[in-house]
View 1 (spheres, rainbow, N blue to C red):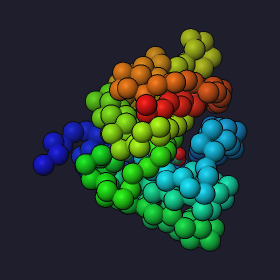
View 2: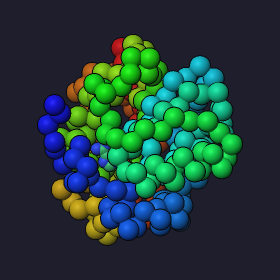
View 3: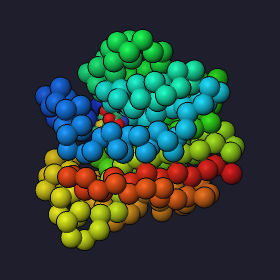
View 4: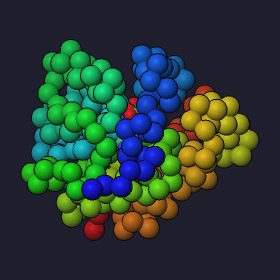
Length: 225
Ligand SMILES: C[S@@+](CC[C@H](N)C(=O)[O-])C[C@H]1O[C@@H](n2cnc3c(N)ncnc32)[C@H](O)[C@@H]1O
């Protein structure tokens, strides 16, 4: 049985805006405070979805990324996983409303829990790791590595290194005020690319850094050898 930790415990994980009652405000908040179109477009360009891709999106939330990916390439095989039932039902409604097809599963991402025919060639995640405790960041990245096919790619968009000054201040008074310092500070100090390399990913790079009203959002990529 999987040991319950704060990052895989249904009573302890953080919903999209930390408190369940705020979930209806999630899409509006992200659109207006994070320059969403800019970073999501840059992220999708990096993911570059193709008709033969099998993508797993960890912490797919309310499905904005799923819709954007599938509008770009409707033939991509997309599986979104998220432990939050409310977010996931919003995601399913968005996919149906846009006339697209995607699989969405309720639960925590675990390499052990995936069906054998789900081996992806790309694993992606956006705005999830910053709000997960350090042990959870390590576990998720390790499981991303385990599920990927050889030669597969990881793509992450999230709050990354926050340069001292304006970006660190904005991150402090917005994201850290909401999600707390303990889980978010490792991201602000630039831990994500280090964890990717320590896990075994090669060609790890920070593809872009996008300054926003809530701090800098970075886009990272890596490859499983
Ligand atoms: C800030 S939202 C981001 C949602 C979406 N990826 C996006 O780009 O809008 C973070 C999501 O991560 C999910 N989450 C939290 N802890 C998680 C975990 N340990 N594993 C997977 N997802 C998690 C939450 O339920 C929430 O939907």
